[in-house]
Image (cartoon, rainbow, N blue to C red):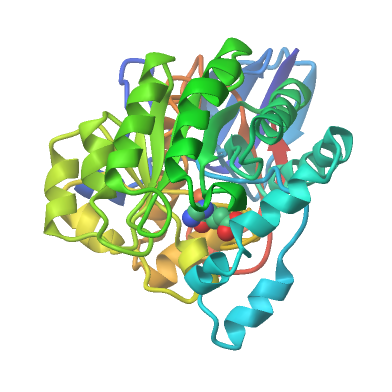
Length: 408
Ligand code: NIG
Ligand code: FE
């Protein structure tokens, strides 16, 4: 199958055959390379070639898409989501408006434990149907690769159910899906007085079962005061590594917890959230390959401080953006809206924000050789925009969907 896209107003994030960009950091994030008045040929789902319209020699295609007035860019790579969940939590949203904090709701047995009760009551089929619906919705908003976490099971059966749903989603949709094992998301109520028992359950029972079925790509821990501390996080990450699961962890959302340094020490692929980032966190990241992933949608929705994106980029580090789509802290997987928040609140430029959610998003899921730039041989998972004036129009036109079509 050959698909030729012609008359592209601007083709963004182009990369030549000879270069190999894995991720962009610091000042290199400032620009998204583009060519104007372009064509692109996709063959069997991969980018075959591209160039300027006035040099187009290809016309042999099964399908021709005229992209007059439209931009084409690599699809979003959303490297942090929890889209497999059973029920929304708008009651807690109202409680927070009235002044009860996210942490207090969690202490009272709401939050993640609320989601765990609902998930364990739901059968796999219904969970799959709902999750697929959410996934298709974010694909219509341009998401072309996604990571999805477990972590609302909090028992062997529940975690297996979630990860099996994620595996079925992987088989169903045409975009790459990565799975992270997040049993260390909260202590279940029955282990409140026996935290060691839950850590042992994860390490001795859940991990072997999940690895045995090949259900997870990564190991995640909610490393945070009141959730999993540094010693527990270290044990869990070491245990995950024994099964080949690289860490991708929740760190420094609510406190300067040392989570970033712990992630770096254990060679995490990414440390995610990062509302609380100071000099020590930046120093740790500078000597590492660990990707800082910012989730400003969660900060927006919880009304907490935003991540210091400028400080991180200006230190020469990469920044990745992801949605964190989940029923508690960010019930939205809308990447265009995320870009608007990143630009207006984190003061990232539109080009920086788009780099953060294309090539850097790909890197945060080890998909940098397949996704994230327009390069021959990479997947042709592409966004065709509505007829818009420029790339900056995407975050500018906030709340609206710029996507005309996702090719995947
Ligand atoms: O990334 N912080 C921990 N986990 C999720 C929220 C989970 C929930 O509230 O259901 C997050 O924000
Ligand atoms: Fe999260």
